Length: 409
Image: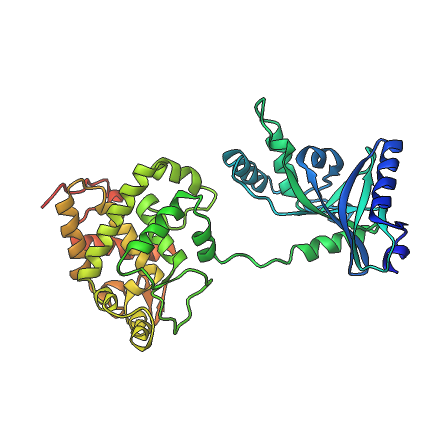
């Protein structure tokens, strides 16, 4: 009943519906697309796939102008940096990428031919003419990135013949179109740790997962899916917290913006040889700390699950090096240590870092910088002060003072 109420043309068979659609397309100069026809929220919906070439020709973007009235446009203002990042992703991975479906709107019902029947969902054939234009409910930046990418394609590229899934909503009311956009935007952000685990296309994440998998201390003790670490979790760190340490080791900046990481990673560990060398040196550092530093040495002897593993909860309450801030401090100091080409000197400094620094929360060196009362700071300034105190205690001169690091003891 629903399909008949929507004004679709019904036929006695699927073959007859297809033939009628082909005849209509021939007469109007349009194209036939096989689609699934269904209802959602009381409205007619179609799903099919459009080639990039067809998409850029028939879909219009009407973004609001910043400072203007967004209610007069169908889309939000364009985030140009987001378009650039998607365009770069498509250019860097032309033969190995994925784009989620886009949701489009059409204000009048196109010619749709379906088999007769009282179906809530059916296969159909939609005829789209040259004059048909779709607006964007969700996917504006993906569409603009596809269009931007098309401008720099080389001869012989098949990129524009690739296709993307589309969901088409038949809706003439602009206010309802705006509401659809707001509804479609209610998605849950991926936890940073889960994104770090999945996005191994990024060299930083690739070395991160190798380090976690091969470190005797970290292996099996990292929460790779959560957004925050539960107070009673037996995991030692979130994956994203370990990633902060790795960012310090690579870039001397755990807060480096995600947009800057691909270019910086390419400079520092842009090839397999550089990545393998970084992983090897980082694992050596972690092995030395695990052997000599409390409470890491005690935790390494524990099982990764069961009652004894819950000792991690107690250690986390009492030790700086069991926190994200502590990891950043270790990464910051290690960045300076790693500048020295002498492996024996580096090994000695890591032993000093493990044994000469009192990592307990109530130690005097942390008070007034990262520790205030019973709170631990997670901001950069106090962390840098604490890291400087560690380097002073180990006799490592600060590069911020333009004093060269020692070449050996």
